[in-house]
Amino acid sequence: MIRRPDNLLDIKGFAFDVDGVFTDGGILCDLQGELYRTFEAKDGFGVRMARLKGYPVAVITGGRSESIRQRFLTSGVDPADIYLHSRDKGEQMADFCRRHGFTPENVLFMGDDLPDLELIRRCGIGASPSDGVPEVQEAADWVTERAGGCGAVREVIEAVMRAQGTWVFDVDRYKVMF
Image (cartoon, rainbow, N blue to C red; front, top):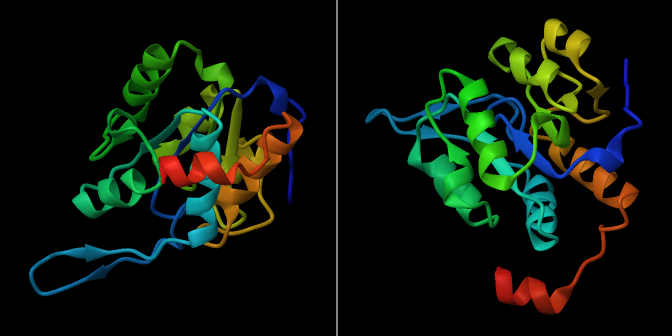
């Protein structure tokens, strides 16, 4: 049930859940309670490309590990756009939009589970990885070909940027930013 919307030109920013979107949803826990996740490098590069071209990127997650913050700081995400321990993703989306001067209609949001439904329905493009829960896939405008943690984030970022003519790698700027 792969679907892709046609309003890619309206997108000015991206927002993502973490577990099940940037990761496959698996979490390892050590005896001290530290949580470990595996992220797909191509998704991280997609975020860097978005940041390289000036697109704001938000991470809105119920996860609380500081390792999440560190992962996205290395991808160029503004620290103010990393929302950990979220219990009302709508509040964080409102803050993200207000700070960047656009509305949710200008945001592509990707989530994979029930806490993401509000933003899936509210944003200009609501996206789900191919392995998102059925309710999210049903509500989404876009169901990706790839699963969470397997390139779904890169898929949506690259498609939007290609449609807008901004998917062009600038090695000199990349060296300065990253």
